[in-house]
Length: 263
Ligand code: OOG
Ligand code: MG
Image (cartoon, rainbow, N blue to C red; front, top):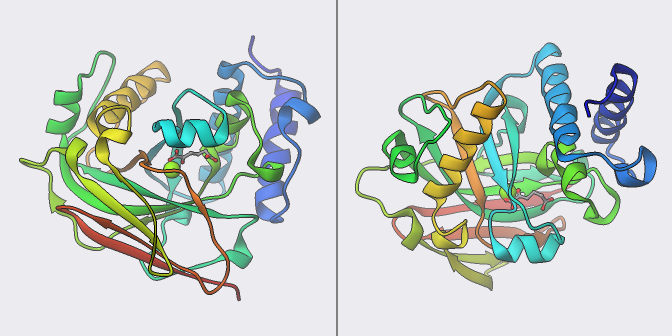
């Protein structure tokens, strides 16, 4: 079932005002009834359309809940897809948490497309061949839902908790890289939180990328050359507070770090 225009408006408004006012809201399951997965993506499309209409720019896409660690932590066992906007892009330096609700930070392998990639039936090998650059990255996620509690359609509607995308500044050519075996050391304030490898992401971030292209094809879209893709967190996300410094050190890709401030 598709949502009718009034419901769609009300739900999109509910989530966009929560983001703008930095206010958490109960999950949609509680406020607007349970949505289907399709209805969740219908809300996400509406939110994307509204942001673009307001002057924001689509710069790429993200996957979420691609690793078992993340799926276990959030209690949602399906990957989700969301949009990255120019307004979400943050240079590697600091994140101002006063602009956010209850941010968490997670390490990701990001890629920049060298060629368009259009589904359906894209294979991981085709996906990897379309990548030009690989970057170490941190994603700052900020669910608009109270206590980060959501169902699969809820988190889809909320653009997969997207808040800030922080790619590293030194891209590495994709050619010859095996994304699955790239290790990451994830640290907060110099102390080890956890370690992982690219394979934590659905077995290989290239598999995630292929799934994203095939998902976009179902929605009449494709990945375009130059777009940035965050392939999903390799580990569970960590809470941050002002004063914290979070760093992800990747084999073959180098490091990316972020200072947490409140202004
Ligand atoms: C959903 C977004 C998950 C990832 O990389 O797994 C995500 C959430 O955990 O709030 O971005
Ligand atoms: Mg993420």
